[in-house]
Image 1: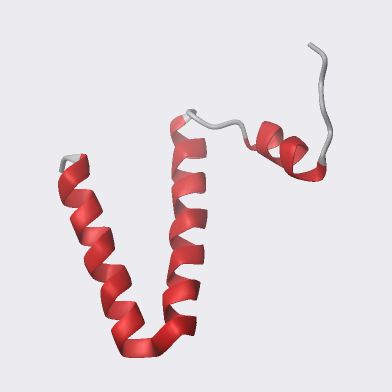
Image 2: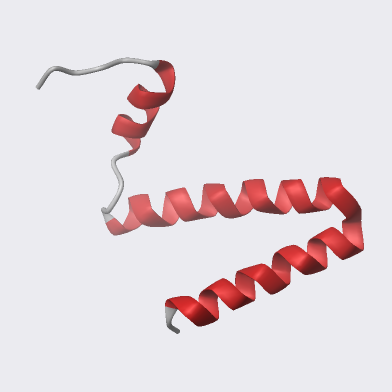
Length: 63
């Protein structure tokens, strides 16, 4: 599945959630999609979760 088809599928899902469950369903589905994307990239080895956590809490490294 290419990225265009995946984008269309995610857009359809978010549209369904917003129509079916209103604003809160839309926001919750976006939150879970973002968490899933982060975990998927971490599982592939394309994202360092420690680095993300350090950036969120404000720790910086000079190296």
